[in-house]
Length: 498
Image (cartoon, rainbow, N blue to C red; front, side, top):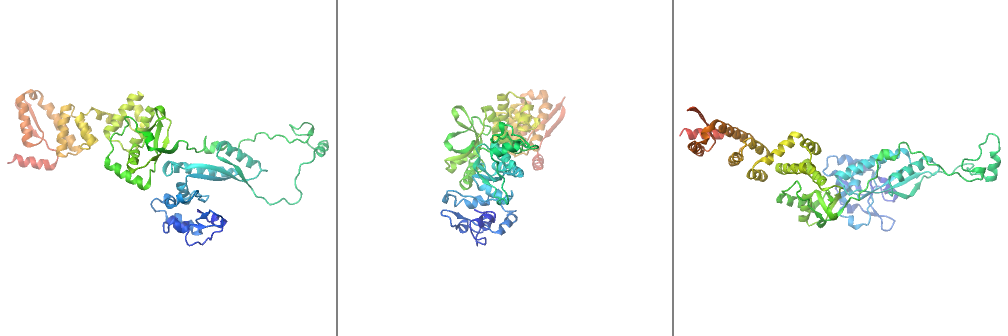
């Protein structure tokens, strides 16, 4: 498939074809209508027209614009052994489409210094695309072009490229085409002539490494590295994806006591439907546990949905990690995605503190949270079991849970939680309810020890349907009826005025 028109001309295809890659990318024509036969057997091509340059402007607001080519090629990929996409040299939308659709990239590189900078930008783009849009994108190889054997710069670029991209630079080199020399050609003189010339005044003698001037060429010393070297531009190693592959779904196992414990069935069914339609867009992260078993670090929800979708293989990325490190990675990934419930996050943080033996300050720094946030989250573990169950079910939010903790005793927290759920109180309403209960508890003082006093308080609350506070100081005081909203206030007024 030709994105720039150059390949179209090279194959002898018409540059004014009625259907081309332009219509394919815009989605106005199916890709099958654009495929043309060439003079070469078993080679078919999709031509490009000069108006393809305008496609980037026309797709600027389009959805999935980076994946237009991938979606277009999907119906025909199985018809061909290889699909080659000729990309323009600029890193625009056309090239991004090609990189998103490709399994691997073949990079032609001119043996010139400034070509190294262009290669740096291309590798950065490939790295970002692998992280976000095409995790399976691999580097097929680097093909050296415009190689001039008489030019030391070409040799230096070749050395740098072969040293950095070990095993990824093709042995084949495309030489630079030059016009024949005019006039006399430079040739090496015969040994006898060279020995006679060396004795002439003002002419150099035999070269170092050629004692006696017997005509042997000297072995070239190692060339000085090209500038700071290719390592300074591209980093320590080329792209490699031995840790990425399609894994049989039964070879994966969920992480024991992973941070996320609850998976909504309806949400899993929705994700499974999406996977059937589009596949898994982000690979599952795993590590090798005991006996080489692949254990999921991040992506258990995708793994479960893939099983429901009927997939036999899923894309995975293998990380080197110990069980504590894997648990930490899973916690951080879920916190960043906000996939954990408040109690799941609290339990995971507590487990990480115990496994790593770290302080709350260290934990906050490791997971990118404020220390106060970590402390408040861990306090949720002090809730009674029945109230924690309400939070897990979604009857109470994290804000409700924090407000209820101010009540102190487990019995009072459970009672206030039941009232908050029954009345559908907001977080502010729950805070007011707790304040009233705590104040009433302190004001009653010794009177609460009286069974008759407790019975009176219960009968008042049962009759009015709300919390009641009695303040009694030496036979004098007040009875306070608490309400949490305007509607509740009006209801109490009507009840008291009957």
